[in-house]
Image (cartoon, rainbow, N blue to C red; front, side, top):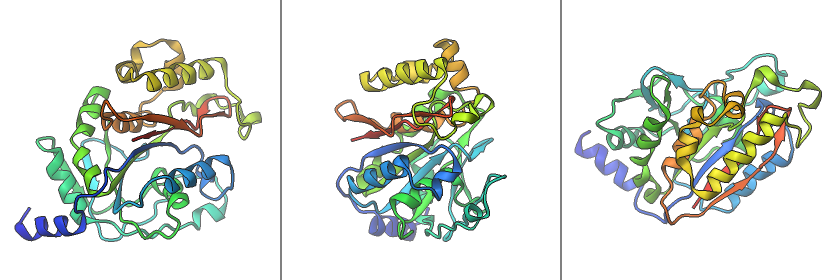
Length: 275
């Protein structure tokens, strides 16, 4: 990084009021084009916080070997799903990127190796929720990938290095789902708010209690907690964005829940605000 890069970062992202951190349960891609209580919750969350200078999103849908950060000027809108209506594939979210913020992210996360990426863009874990929060697409957005070779504790510790970005007006969003088992969806109740299998109800209750009590170690060590979480988290991709958000919490900060509902038997929309 040269002196011009450092000057650009300083100019674009000067010190500001400390930004909150969010974890958003993004659910079905259809939430991008539907009107329901969950997208209303995303909008309300945006209205209750300062408008960010930029957004850094950790999405369940960028799951990589190694860690990458998008560094292009204009990230493409990625439609990384199938079997949905054409209207969903027609959605574009033309938010700019931020090569400057990408460079600063790489520096902050050192000595962990993070590489700049110029090919990915914004996947639906990012744009399907951010479009409701900031529909004008006027806020720069970058994504940080999740290294699938690393354990949960690594991701929690790595996230802590991003805390300085919160002082520069950067909104950090983890986007996934705490309970996410697509193999066990109750299709009859896919749109029924409150519908959950017994193990999903237990997983929601236990993780909510740990979140509100600040017992993050149990959340990090989810694989040790019992069968209910093994069903809730059959693969870690949608769960690890929560770990990133929790890694950014200071002890004195408040943590609150919203969109806290189960749907379709095996999905939770539970979302978290920190700060």
